[in-house]
Length: 69
Image (cartoon, rainbow, N blue to C red; front, side, top):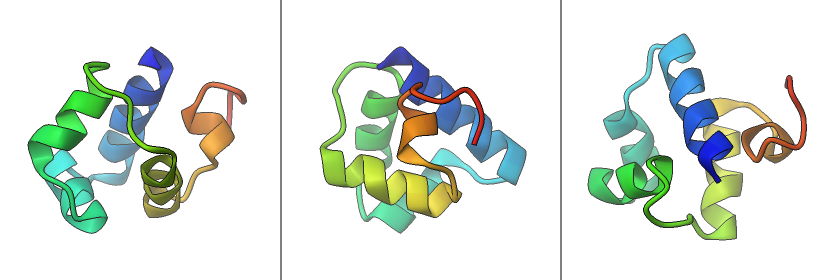
């Protein structure tokens, strides 16, 4: 899921948000989010949906199924 982490990081940067901001929104530890974004662990399906909602992008985009959102 390397595409996932890269796209989440890109969206955070473009939106002026931090990983800490996103982790707080998701009610997870920043270290947990970092593990997901750096491909050390895969996030649960609900977390993917929650991240997409928080960043206002589609899950298809985050998962690399679409090039643009």
